[in-house]
Length: 178
View 1: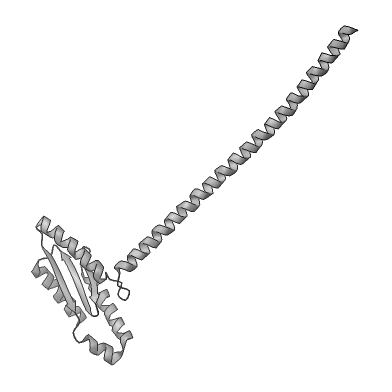
View 2 (view 1 turned 60 degrees about the vertical axis):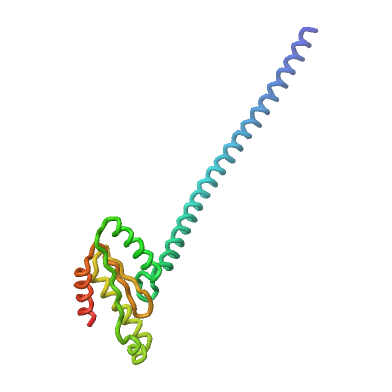
């Protein structure tokens, strides 16, 4: 009977160890599930954060491009503004000198424009400036640039254009606008 008591005591000990092992395994399994769920949540949050960051960068790039456009464009005509025209002219001069290529710059000034504003009003004057800009853009080459220097003055950068080429372009534009 002593043997049976020892065996029974050992059996109870083993059963207690097995129950503890089962509880520990269950706890560890729950911990693994919890860690997996937390990892999945972190992964989803990281994906959403990356998407939000990407969209934020795209918006910042769009805002930067829009600001650049405002900084370089004449609001009324949509042409290059004075600052942009002079910046491009400076670069064009350097390129033409280096390549020993012709470059022309034409200055367009609308005669008696003040009388248009005085007689018909500034809204009509603005429409006239817009018309000049649209007409000039339709007559220049892709590589040319026209910009508004201010008031009724416009400048045209004509790369690879000799003085004779520039004269012909300006004369065609003058006749069209006349």
